[in-house]
Image (cartoon, rainbow, N blue to C red):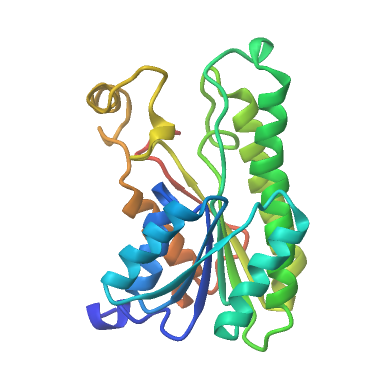
Length: 259
């Protein structure tokens, strides 16, 4: 593929990215816009979404912010509708919104933290994906969905992350089942499972970025954590025509952490 072609892979297509106010979500929204997509930047808080839109627009892209809580069915439906109504279609959706509540053994995890992770990480993906599939399967061109899971869950475990890992394993299983259910509807569903990346979520309690760098150098086969742009590259690949035969795949991007 030429560089020029890479920049236009998503020209004329609409991409919805949840959790797009920071981190992997923001990097993914920027990457789609850079390759020609019209991007719906979604999340619960307006201010960080507006900043993502500003970054896209100043680089020559097209985007707008849509607030909503994916744990609410009405909001999930509204986000999918907003993309179709604004730009005429919903071609790609990236379900990235998620939270981590852990750092302590399971027996010491507050029940509220369990429910928060379950509602956002699993129910939120279910509701968002359901709304997106309903839109996409009625389009002649169908659509592509990429759900952001984690290497924790199916691929690896870590102390203090049992509940989080359980929710992310559920995302992978949910995605694979939905992929089988809806590929004949023209909706292609896959998963990206990041490891530690350059976001606050990968910092341990009280840990500095410098300390995280040292820990990664000592413990990860690659010797460093992933940049958010590297995760975004994997997401875009799965959503692109080049991955047309990838259905229900789980692409691990974790610096070798789950080996």
